[in-house]
Length: 269
Image (tube, rainbow, N blue to C red; front, side):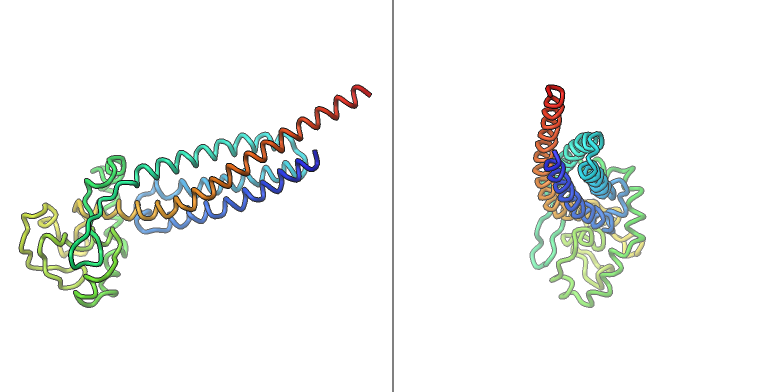
């Protein structure tokens, strides 16, 4: 039984270590400017990481100091957390699979169509009610203004690999035929009927293309890119957590069996 508890304590230490990359991924996602504007998307991964950390500590304490009740609580809570992480992973994978990106000749960056992204993301992030809250947050951020200090001429800008949100929100669509003045000032469009966003574009720093479908698509493009990076870390840690949990269950079961056997021997003696 002591050996089983030591194994369980070691496994919980491994689970605790797994919580660190989950928490780090949550902090990384929460720190992104686009996620700062979508409050309900900022915290799930961070909370999951902290919950795994606390549950692992509880399991370690229960195993090291032979608190069987605490071990039982640990096994139940860890099972729930693993299921929640799997649900989050599947949801994130499914809704970020479609990409609205398309290449533009002569440009280092891509542009984005809102219709190319999943309907779930469109309905929960770029719907009218949500966008009324997101738009002023984006306008107050440094996402677009910082482009003016990074690129001084058209050749530099056109060759740059700017982010999806900068591509969609900080400039008009290329098809409109606007002439470059600086990254956030464009003039003399030649094809304003090509896209409804062409007439929405405004050089006013508080307006730009924040009301454009291209900006909504760019925001979804940023979220897709960030969440798919985080998913790689989450997949690896969840696989390790499942492996740890299965072994911990086996060790706990062996400890319980050995305890029953010892009680039987004492009663028989």
